[in-house]
Length: 271
Length: 317
Ligand SMILES: Nc1ncnc2c1ncn2[C@@H]1O[C@H](COP(=O)(O)OP(=O)(O)OP(=O)(O)O)[C@@H](O)[C@H]1O
Ligand SMILES: [Mg+2]
Image: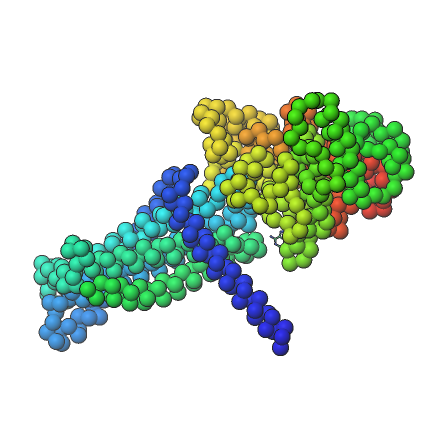
């Protein structure tokens, strides 16, 4: 029995240690955004890899999600004679929930795995050691540009995702429910306005819809860099890190989404 | 093959050893000795000469030699002092050696005995469990991360696997340390990169634009050497610089390391399996076996050793 307890104790300690390492990495990555030297070239390259190259899948998923959302709701709305509320329904769902979460999950799958694989293979081929040896801090050179690029690109992608989703809903509303486009977009705006404003100008829906991707962007990139930099065990280890990154960041996105929603609702609605 | 092709016509059982740091009596006895003893002898020797130097000069001498103190060896550029290191099992136990300015220390040993690990300890890519690593007389363990980066910049490292950045071209790889830490102009950087590539027998114009994935194994290795040397570091660490290279290139690299030592007084620590080139370039050889330094001495001392393991290790050579 004691040996078993010992083992459990050790395992718990290791877990806590790596959790601590995770937060140290996160802290350093964010701190170095304001530190010299700043690797601007790497930032631009990562913004391209993370943002621009994810545009295709984000457009595709957003558009079809908006359409299917509208299609599923069309029957119900028609039954209650509420077809003209289609715009409200689609925009509320896309902006608050589906846009951020879907963009997050797609980026976790596409970009998170890519970052983990790249940093992981750099680790197992001693390139990280080489960076250290050449006097470069790998966190400054590799992690910070990726985290910053994600912080910028994920909200951007989410906005695009929201927009094409709402456009997708528009198509369904027009062709299945004969809701005119002008009415559809008016109800979209009504929905956004009905939720109140932060500082009189920023719709609360937007606050919610953009805080989430910011957090998701940080979570995805830091998780990917963490697993990538802690890769061990050759090419097989790279595969393990990649899988762990996608699984962990997807779960974190879904769990954090709940808590963020709760937090933001209480903050935004209360006063 | 058994013919000794060293430059110096050293006879294996000669009792008049030309090397000053060796005690001729012991060499004549040719008995196996512990690395510790050798280091201690060398330490005493160095301290003696240091005292002499100190007395002959009459500057203020901020630091008196303290032979009893288990601090850094006076004058040593790199020193490991009773280092232990374990991963899931012990790898190094009680490892001590030192390299003085201008020396070429070759570390030999069987595969998996911890030679690469030793180099990583010197670079503080790993920290010892016990013992100390001194670079230029300073313990590197308590340094902050940024300070450690500064210390590493004084050293050039050639990795066993070359460790080229695979997202960068050959040019960018070799230029990397220059761009990071010097304010050389683009022209100067280009000239330096080409010079270093020529040093390792690569035609700059052919390889400069290539990505590491487009190079052969030996070419990668040589680019790795060029990058390690790029910022003219005074300490060079080579992890098997000649493995996987043809005999001609091996000769070139060996001569290159010797040339750096002779002309620029570069201190080198070379991990090598190639006993032949080790004997050519080494001022001292350390044999790593059973987790510790089994032998430390000059090539002549090693060749003269009666130790069964050393004889086996040297094989037919
Ligand atoms: N990161 C690590 N984690 C666990 N064990 C390691 C690690 N790095 C090295 N080892 C172990 O340490 C031992 C020494 O490794 P090292 O790479 O220093 O050997 P080496 O002497 O350079 O061998 P070779 O001549 O084959 O390159 C090996 O047994 C290896 O299994
Ligand atoms: Mg090795």
